[in-house]
Length: 259
Image 1 (cartoon, rainbow, N blue to C red):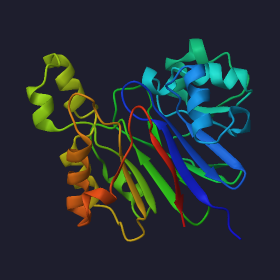
Image 2: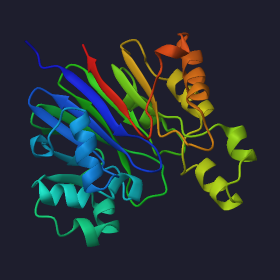
Image 3: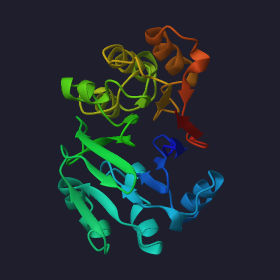
């Protein structure tokens, strides 16, 4: 019997991000933006002991994705994978770890039973990537912290059985909110974060014929609502907005199995 591919979130948003992916006996963590105590507690909530992790994959150097990586990796002797640019940007904290592997943003590799395909994205970081995870048959595509889409992103995410897709903000809420103008420009810019409309447009350009799960992620507390994000994505898929999952900052989301 083939191993079940499943995924869950420890939390998603500007205060911390981490995503679990498991196939068979292999369980990897993508990013860790929480402190050590919080990370262990959130892992435990999902039934995972940190020493059972196979390692940590890092997307980029921003604190809400990398703040907890070094302490978790050091305490539980976990290997870490990241790009050269990300390592350079966080060398003071990550460079001293005993087991760090630099990855090529275009080259797939395997961690145990999990196939990992990194891919570059436009974001205001040194060498940011996102990841597609698979078990050789089914694929989970993850895309957050991206300001705009590219043909390569859409080619990479087409045909996935599950998607975790950034819906950071509603354009009207961002424009009329209390963020300083400079922050509004950064968030809404080409190297910032996807708004609901652009996320939906990107989704509409993908091959979604195999899609079993979709989760809206990295929602802004001030500039979005779960209802607006779900409505935008469900309009493209012609489904009920209740079918769209939403990752929260506090709870993330529970395990979802890809069959």
